[in-house]
Image (tube, rainbow, N blue to C red; front, top):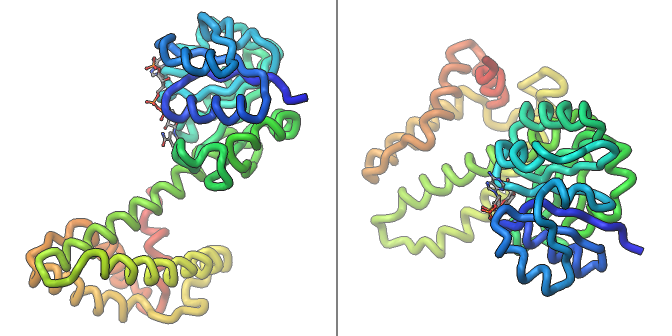
Length: 285
Ligand code: NDP
């Protein structure tokens, strides 16, 4: 039989998680600050708790999916956590996750942090997954229940690692969004259809994505010239064409100049024969 799950938080994500556990036959206790959001789930079979403390007192795994770290602290403040297994799916920074893990452990709970790599419509489908880090025992004990809403990817005992992986992926995504915004801006005033450029952009970005593996190999070996196809000296020279074209098209280069500036600084440091990997070293504070 499916183990009982308690869920704190019935926002867009929490509600999707709740439906996935109900659909899989898990007895579900829910709590939400605004009680009305629990009504439809009650009709679908969930037990509604009046307070977070009451919800946590129910048998089984406790999952938290609230807005932010502060709302989690609020919700847990009155609860008895002794002997509880807590999984926090609220987006947080690595340090916030580590601090919450320490706080929960000091109150007798086992703690696992999660970073959701999905949007609510993906929950309960084969798409998306959740990064987990923290108590391996908790993860192994509740693996079946955790795998119901989305695939699970355990990334280590350090409770901050799930958040760190989550943020690393999102940060790379925003870099890509920035480049795509610049690309569309370049063609905006011309007789080029955005829908035509879109397919070419997707193909190009997909082809270039595998360069991530080369960057990783170079970071591992410490040799940034390993397998280099287009060295930094050539790329910095070529970037002048990028800036000139932005100017010709009447487009601000502000989304791409931070990266181009770092390439130039690395070149000025005498690394013209390397790949762009050295830019990473310049970011370390
Ligand atoms: P919503 O804004 O839809 O819901 C926020 C939830 O937090 C509600 O249940 C709200 O309760 C509750 N809440 C806010 N402040 C407090 C507080 N001080 N005390 C108690 N409860 C509070 O957010 P989502 O459900 O979309 O997101 C939840 C978490 O999931 C976030 O950390 C988000 O980053 C993460 N996430 C969301 C994704 C998404 O695409 N939606 C994707 C990946 C992660 P109330 O109903 O009373 O306002």
